[in-house]
Image (tube, rainbow, N blue to C red; front, side, top):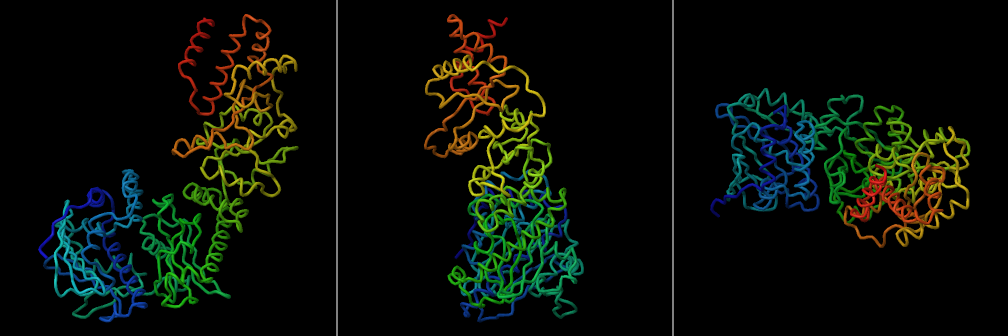
Length: 617
């Protein structure tokens, strides 16, 4: 086969430009990334070799070799892992094969620290080679195949692939150093980088010393070592390796579970949310080992979905080395490990939650995903609710449900909440005026999952969750902290006005009724009981989700408001009934605008506004 010339996928070109020109403040990272990829390749073949011994017939001792040709300014990083064939080279080095690549690139912010974390998570660390090299050659042969391949590129838009004979199993990456990167042609410099960033790699990393190969790293699986012997920096470097990230771990959890099922866990919660946190096709982030042998990094059942941001490794002796994916799906061992992991993580979060400021960092990064557990995890939903945090009308600080309950007013039996998108907009909603007048705190639910989990957990510590639109009689029984201005209309005048407004609105609304929730505003709009909230309906329309029908809406009026009194008085004069009808329609439009909804008939709305302005002037 002759040399094949191909162009990089457009997304790769953008990533290369970012990596080479602006991404990493520390170029040493290139070696860490390439060693990490080599380690993954060895992990994969070691596992496959257990089921298919022929794949490792030419050698089962996995290792990574680093060679420096100082006189030529060339570095070579080689492994005897799984290797790549023609298609693998194109898919792994010429394209971003993961779905969501465009979303990934659109998320790049220009902030070097944030973008480096995204690129690391997205698994394109190979391109860091072009930070230090103006040409890269990759020689590779996939285990079980005879044909070897050569991949060559200068990182400027294209690459070539050609057949190559007599290639060792695995992958060899040769870096031709730039003139600005000649410091990396020093073996002592590379040893320093390896010990700093890759000492935890579980395979031996060899470098030549006085004509003999020398193991540079400790080559011990970090999770098998005594916690007392491991430094914070070593944990951090291992986290960055396992997560392909560049931030710090917010939580490090290293423990050994003993009992019916024995396993060791080394888990991390990142400071920053993973790029694919809300992608449906995201991969699990916890690797499974048995007796230090890598089994799989693609086991959805190892960690529940709402803890998908957790990174790390689990190593158990209770699985056979040659366990298949089919066996993994059926074994009860994983279910027991999963339950143990969840219990331990939740217990650790309880401890961390005692520091409000530190816990807020976790919540702001991962809270949206974590809160899904209230809906999904029947066994732990009360604990997850206890660990959840919310915005409220009491200030800008996040509050817990226990905080809320401790501040409930006499006569209040429910946890009141409101759903929306923006806390600041929600705090100005007319629906909250009556709660404010009584000093009653309202939780502001701003995430999509908040529309659903109260159905799964209708009460917390015997306090029912109740949307503000359903406060009704309970709100009226709570003593007002300040007197509400205005005299309520007579029952006869009120009934007459409501009846006329219903006629005016026709089938536009389900009902018109009075409310005790309003203080300053004349009206507000709510969904009928049993219907989806106005916020959820808006979200569904925004995401083009089909609606069985629109919510039945109810216009609630404030019987003490001066405008309502004036309209009731005007209704007694037959010559002013058309004026009352126009005012009623404007009040409905006003209520729609207050809820963030568009008016139904903008032209009619403008005509009415203009007419009232003329009369006022």
